[in-house]
Amino acid sequence: MLVLALLFVQCGHKNEPEFHLRASLLVNESHTWFQAFEYFSEILEARTDGRIVLDNYHSEQLAKESEAIRLIRAGVIDMTTTGSPLSNWVEILTFCELPFLLRDSTDMRVLINSDIGKRMEQEMIDKIGLRPLGQFPGGPRHLTSNRPIKHPDDLKGLIVRVPNVPSFVTAWEALGAKPTPMAFSEVFTSLQQGTVEAQENGFAIIKAAGFYEVQKYVNQTAHVVSWTYPVIGEEKFQSFPEDLRKIFLEAVKDMVKHEHKLFLASERKIKDDLKAAGMTLVEVDKDAFGEAAREAIYNSLSPEMQVVYNDILKLRE
Image (tube, rainbow, N blue to C red; front, side, top):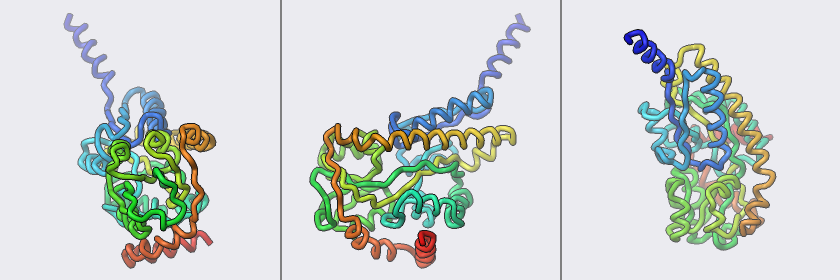
């Protein structure tokens, strides 16, 4: 009986993971970011023989985006996806989603792979305690609304939900709108109730969040060419033994590749899906939007970041 009991206890311990991780994601389960994390969870558990288990929570079930960052730093949860909200901790992170800075995905890749991009990632580790695990593309961000917006003059007084990012508030104020920072999980209901009248996001999030149910137009401003970082708390990452760290990072590479395939497949058909759902895609005067906002955005940066801004423009030449 004693031998059987000991065997039972040993088996029980064998099934317990050494590291039980939790990830809080702002997107819902149909979005490619969440699907990538689910894939990551599967391969990570398999490759570590159950030594690392990852549970993923979509739609900000565990925490709003900024709160998730705080919880990771406090060691309460372990992973999330994030980008420009990190500028509330370190200013240089504003450049991963600065309005009217990058023209397209080529500009984005040049910045990510530059010394500036490497500095951004290192400062995430050194100053915030978050380790970036590659990048997920977000696609250009566009404005949705219930009236067509073709020119900044059409924005006057429009209440636009924005993430809690200073540069977003600055940009939309300069354009004549009334930006309202708000957690992503509250946006649909706020649009439905008229608390806010518009919001801005990439095509994939517009579809995944069901904004076509409460918004009629996608005004193709492409005001931000963005990406998000999947991240883990640096302290948690350093707590892995060397063998698990290696397996973890290899699985991360496969997760990023998997998400990129999902993203490309989604982008090819998403415009048609939004049109079929009843949305009208509006061509806008992009130059007018950029000209109206760039000076205010530049002036909102510290002198040090203004230098970085100009260095990024040189990368585009």
